[in-house]
Length: 304
Image (cartoon, rainbow, N blue to C red):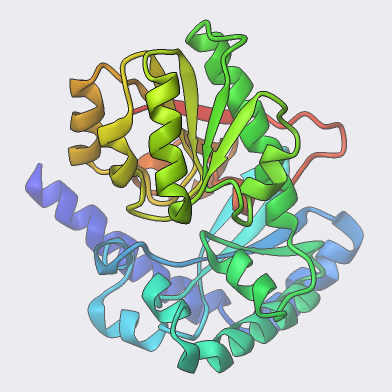
């Protein structure tokens, strides 16, 4: 079993290197673009980043990880509704994105991805995690297709969880309601209460008045923030997580100890090679997907 895991791990890492040697250059992108101009099969290009070095080293060797910190590399393909997309990756993390001295690196990445998008003749380019919000707030991008698609997918996921848990008329407690995605979601839901990190006092008062009543808690905050709210949650609540990465085992145990189910929005029904890890296995993240012309978006929700 250990040998098999090692072989798979090395195969994936070697595969990424070979993929870039053969296809990670503009000659190939222009060739794809020439074909795509007529077929319209390549819908988007998507760039992801690791939650931490453990994630990136599941895909690449440490020496390759250093090379691709701010240089997007082709790491896979994805498919949804008979359309495909190219997956690019960098090894920089959220801590790097938030440093002021890295704004030029962010601008450079956006320019590179835009150049690749035009070469491939793709309709859109999208970014994972907090990157769209950061790029938009810094005026590096003027629009964000991720925001619209993710907000719509979240609303579908909320309705799906309501049916699963038989909670049709319960209120929605939105954590991160003023955020990039949260602000788009909350304006579509009337029976909701929104809280952000700076609203702790207001949240504590809310808990005193509502404790014991059934509700759905929608987590749209940032990595690691959910654990600060768990001590104040109660039995009768169901948690729906949209944040990357999914809640840790320690957080799930604490919720289970309070008999609080936790669901995770995997994303859209689709596939990828190599498959997305952990909580995103079996689908493609909302931010990497697109809204179909017929509106038939099949959101995937998994109970953790």
